[in-house]
Image 1 (cartoon, rainbow, N blue to C red):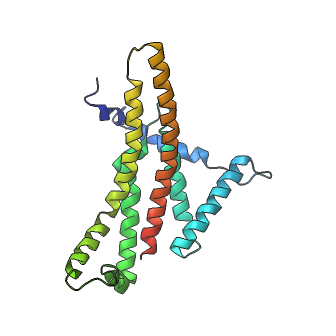
Image 2 (image 1 turned 45 degrees about the vertical axis):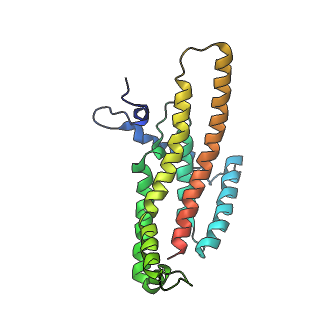
Image 3 (image 1 turned 90 degrees about the vertical axis):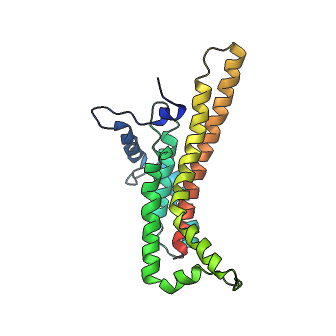
Length: 218
């Protein structure tokens, strides 16, 4: 019997190895092969999404190489969708997964910015037109906002992913009910799965677009 409701999201251990984290490797099976003479519809769809994201990220970063951000979008998107299937571990609902992407990205942007564009980073701490009295407070506020960025990126993704799964778990453990209530619960669960699919797309896009915006500031 589980200790609390959130323990249903804990990875199970066999032989002191948490094999549930291997679900992350499933995403590599969804990578399409671009070496076919006649590409299929999945290749055309992914290429269209790639070009759309590339054009959008290129405007924000002001550079032509956006492979890192588009790859990050697809990797998080596939892992978000994996959690919607039964008996597959939801890796993106854990902070250890989200911090793995958020913290190195933020640290690389900060190190590059302070080493290469030091004057620009100092100027970013003081917005233009700030009154003299508010200048010390604005420096503190901007410093704190920069320091909490990896935490907000990681918590936003994991919290949004675990919220819908928690609601689906609650509806799935309702026990014995009359037929009308069962039909109502199944209908609500189908609607929640559709909503969770939209959340999986939106959260992966938000994570990638915020990472792109953070990189454009340095």
